[in-house]
Length: 402
Ligand SMILES: Cc1cc2nc3c(=O)[nH]c(=O)nc-3n(C[C@H](O)[C@H](O)[C@H](O)COP(=O)(O)OP(=O)(O)OC[C@H]3O[C@@H](n4cnc5c(N)ncnc54)[C@H](O)[C@@H]3O)c2cc1C
Image 1 (cartoon, helix red, strand yellow):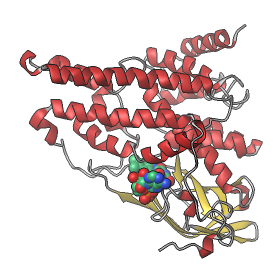
Image 2 (image 1 turned 135 degrees about the vertical axis):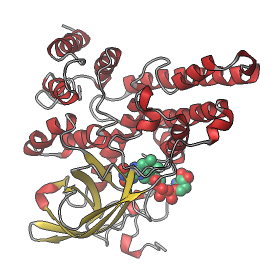
Image 3 (image 1 turned 180 degrees about the vertical axis):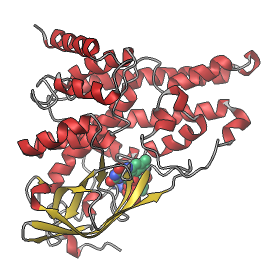
Image 4 (image 1 turned 135 degrees about the horizontal axis):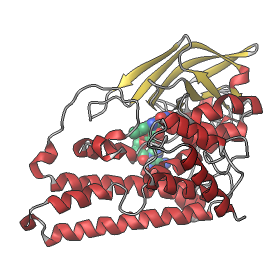
């Protein structure tokens, strides 16, 4: 039986056993994991079937077609980053503890990399983890941590050796977000909502068994997480198929406009956006097919870059179509959402066009800015000369970090 036939058979079995209309999302996701349809490239028994990652499209597209709920917006950091990082670097015990509950969203994750002085240059981070017997004691601050207020566990990159150059003195841990010394404070965004947070660590004790990868090798683990993040951010946009992405908001609004407002200049712009949406979709299909099996490479940055800029452009067009109403936000109430990006990317009844416009500005920054994505694509996909670097071999403690 071909790989595709096997996957199609399993998806139909899933839909027979757990019809999405009568099954709770968690039960459906659990059954999806058990059938190896969660992360199709993972080994059998770990939510996958050991197949080409491109086969995940077959699953996602069929589930989308029948209106099954997606867990990506509920647990973006868990499904998109923690799961793949645990499969690459975790022990079998860690994998059996976390993989299934992560996919069912019983365990939600956040990712704690960025700091006030270290965003694009995340390897410059200052949060310190000092060894104390079988434990590490963590002090420092993280920022822009999406969904930390609902996360039970967090992925943490911290400095374990300040005398090594910045990329070499890092180690990678996972942390219980409810343990003493971890403080999560909301950061309010221009929509009024606080989807992300600041995290303060004060003498937080982490067992050494919660380290992923070797001491000092945290950068390599983090790169694996970030590559998966970019692929996942692209996947969120792609899940939707032709005319199913954010372009549908523009098309719907256009069809409701009085004929005298459908002028040729706007029609031209809409056509350009429609073509862009197809280019984004097809480029991502191609990037995924050319991706090496298993571990995603820099191609993930293609999808992440195109999707985020396209979303921003479509919402800008939509808000322009709304005219004066486009300037009015429905409310500025402080909320701490339990689903990420719902006002911009969620189901149609949850999407708020004006807030979507404001939210998608951030999509071009989160997960690496568009400038950084272009640098990665230039250097690692197109083979252009590298950006000059002067601090790669200097001990982190000697860097001028003013
Ligand atoms: C919606 C959202 C969600 C986020 N979620 C998380 C999260 O869950 N966890 C987490 O750890 N972080 C998260 N972040 C943080 C995000 O990863 C950082 O904001 C991002 O990496 C940029 O870092 P910075 O904000 O420090 O900007 P800076 O790095 O200070 O960049 C400022 C400007 O300089 C440009 N720039 C910097 N370096 C270069 C260069 N070498 N070449 C060209 N241009 C450059 C940037 O593109 C940008 O325009 C999130 C951010 C957003 C907006």
